[in-house]
Each structure stands twice: as structure tokens, then as C-alpha cells.
Amino acid sequence: GAGVSQTPSNKVTEKGKYVELRCDPISGHTALYWYRQSLGQGPEFLIYFQGTGAADDSGLPNDRFFAVRPEGSVSTLKIQRTERGDSAVYLCASSRLAGGEDTQYFGPGTRLTVL
Amino acid sequence: EDKVVQSPLSLVVHEGDTVTLNCSYEVTNFRSLLWYKQEKKAPTFLFMLTSSGIEKKSGRLSSILDKKELFSILNITATQTGDSAVYLCAVEAFNGSSNTGKLIFGQGTTLQVKP
Image 1 (cartoon, chains in turn orange, green):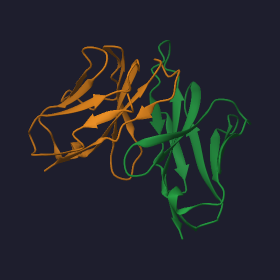
Image 2 (tube, rainbow over the protein chains, first blue to last red; image 1 turned 45 degrees about the vertical axis):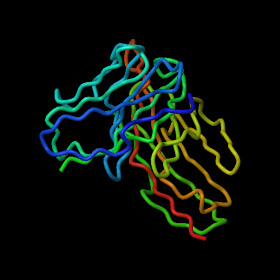
Image 3 (cartoon, chains in turn cyan, purple; image 1 turned 135 degrees about the horizontal axis):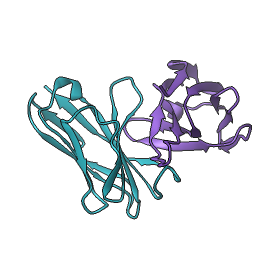
Image 4 (spheres, chains in turn blue, cyan; image 1 turned 30 degrees about the horizontal axis):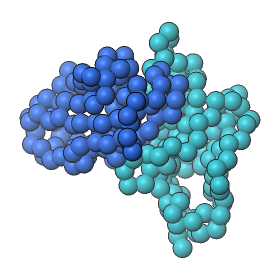
């Protein structure tokens, strides 16, 4: 595929609602990463998938956050009972090889605003 | 705790100037250091550095890593307005037996190039 794509590009929701953010990695890329970027900060790691399995979810802030990648391609980040502090840009990245053996290519991000 | 610190946080120059951006890090089990350029949305890959003292160049951009002093610099010569962006430094560290490839980012340096 052309590049990593993410949908929606913007999402506005109310506090307490559930949201899903989607990531389509570059075709054939094994590894997929989610990061969160707050205003004025660098991206922070959330979770890493190698194929279908979450190999490292140590960056998920709490149990309201969950991500899946059921067929080893598209991934969905799910946030339950959203809070205002969840407002940020959520970035997805993919790489050809797993385990950091290759460059990570980033998508344009989803800007989440929780009112 | 692993951390990456960039300086300066922001910089304003005029077209034609040369700039040097700094990145220092403290990580356990260093694997590689990466530079990304972030304009509106997706960070775009610039360089990956793994060995000390070997300069990487791409056009007017160059970067070098010092693994003894734990820092890297990114140089941009003959700056242009199109170089205006946030420049992100990230470090990848080994994570025990399973290397996830997750990146630890600095805050970024915001560069503004005036005509």
C-alpha cells in the first residue's frame, strides 16, 4: 500500500463515551505500533503488535485502553469511558520486520478531542 | 527510567542559516537512535544511527551519533522555509530477550525558518 492510513482523522466525543480508532498499516508490514502524542510533546509508546498478538502493551495507561489486530493487518485502538485527559493525537506506525529490525513508518494520526 | 532530551525546544532562523539540533539520551541497552521530521501530521523518517562517529547525510541534512557521550546531533545547512517543522529524536532500546522495537521520543525541537 501507499502508506499507513488512519481513520478518522479527527474525532470529537463526550466524556464517558467509547471510541474506536483504526489503523491500516503498509501492506506486508509485520509489526504495528500505537503511540499517543500530547500537545508540545513527543509521541509516547502505547502498544506493539507482532502479527496478531500484542507483544508489548506496557505503554497502555490503564484498562480503559485496549487494542486488537485480529488478522495481522488492520488494528483498532479502543478507549472506553473516555476522559478529557485522553485528548491527544493517536499515531500508528508499521515496520516491515518485527522487533525493531526495520524503520517505523507513521500514519497521519487521529486527533481525539474529549469534551 | 529511559529518557531522551532534545535541545533547544524551539529555534527561529533565517533562510540560508545552518542549524544544529541536539539529542541526548539515557537508556538501558541502547539499540539505535532515529531522527524524524514532523510537519502537520505524520512524522517522516530521516535517519537511523547505530554506530558512533559515522555521519549519515541526505542532501542538506546530516546526523552523527556519539555512543560514549550519549548524544546525537542533526545538522541542516542552507536552511529553507520548507525545513520548518518539529524535529523528533527517538531511541530504541533492547527489552530483555524480546526486542519490541518501541521508540522513546524526546519532546522535539520546533524549527521555524523565516524568509
